[in-house]
Length: 428
Image (cartoon, rainbow, N blue to C red):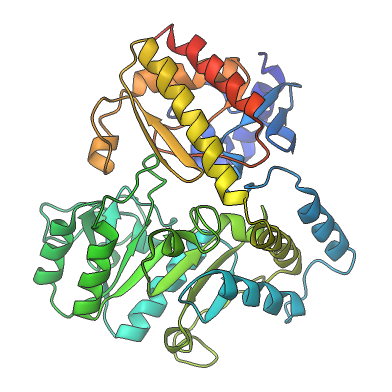
């Protein structure tokens, strides 16, 4: 495939946008080469500026669960735009989507909409601190909760030490209140709780990790976090920005029957438009302004276009009783096909999947946390990425990202993908 126009567009972008992109992963730094500039998308396919058609496995990093340009969403946005694009005042749409979300997700009474997953997680942490009157939080290495200062923390010198900033601009004062544990490792959490008695406000976790590839929670991990939080007056925050309304109608809480105290959303809840949200039982949510002392605001929060898109998406997911079954079946079909051809070609790999999230790691050992994810053969992944791109298949340009399956994919698309993986992996 030729990418002459994409290359020129990237060169133009580099002159006026830092790195030529508005989000770092788009820059292809992990895989090399020039980013693909998209012109349009429909269903399961991307169409780039050079006229190439690509089967899409990132789906805008998750929200296109029913496919690009899904007609009910497009129609809702267009009709709403004709009435005005933003008011900075309440609309009935906000209440309608809030009622639907609260009805779909177990254990939440109230929800507040914001403009991104980053903002949702940032606000959830502030709310947890205000509710518990404690300062510290625990996060997990490899889990990404947006680029708020509290989350850009790397490990300190030991399990009980404070973290340290891993980005210039994040102060050590901020970092000292973020403690770093290890995903699927309850002992690391227990050690931090014991060393910081009665000072931890919240544990925030991707209940199914998606930012070190797809990594499922091991048996007992989420249950253990719930127990530790309940016993120590800590709020458990599920970051369901990726998993919410994707792995089940009620997200991971429904899938694994585990109750979080606060849940954050993004991606699917916006139907492809920039939206985030956080939700909890009324006792916690009533601490937010204007009812309570914890301040959170946003001029464009509840934007009518975003609310219209999100409402159309959630209505379709709520009414389609088979959608999550279909998504899982397609994911399993792809996983089984990949497993067959990669084994046949002697490739060392591990496949992780939950529902419609899946990733392939080029390492023979189980991938259960950030450390084991980092053991993957990145040179092989680069060949894999560019090989598939040449065949007309677009996956995340990073070994540390999950793939997202869309219901718009056909089994012909999946067979084409499996055959392409067979062809590409023969050349490893």
